[in-house]
Length: 211
Image (cartoon, rainbow, N blue to C red; front, side, top):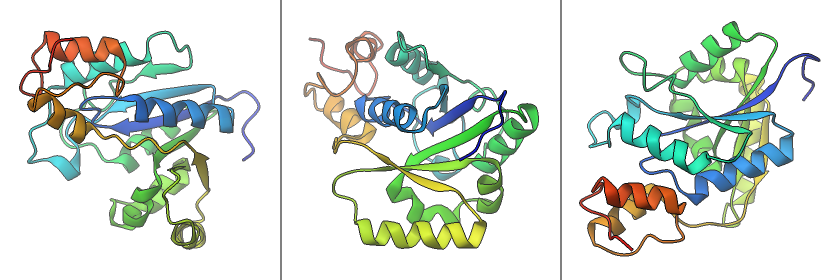
């Protein structure tokens, strides 16, 4: 994992972040520590290709929640690159343009290990591998044998650099949080208090329970 002497090691953490929660933050923190990343850019999707027909919360709300969640961590920053772009954003386009704009920096694309099984269905996976190291977040319940086989396959096929991020098993999802909000069930301890308060104040997800 050699890096150019004057460049930064930058992690790219994509997702809808609808809403951002402790699982996202835990993965980002572990990636930064385990791979010596200088920065991690949280990059909310604007018009994600795999969720075109779903009801996604507005970009402004999602960006505001990310900013609240990462406040105080000097390595974390919000990138509005995709939410401010026109049309659908594909990962390969984002990474290729970042590589072109910042040739001295090295980019690390952070994803869930479960997404590796679908990686070849993504648009131009070869270009993704050319422009970024892939960091796959592994949880305790991951099938280690299947994961290793997939990493080996992708590494050989695309000359990819793929490494595992070891993270605690934290079973929570944005979908579950939205569901709990709609059911007026507490979401305390699943995400930062500032984000929980923002959800309640803006009546997101059918009205979060104010605590």
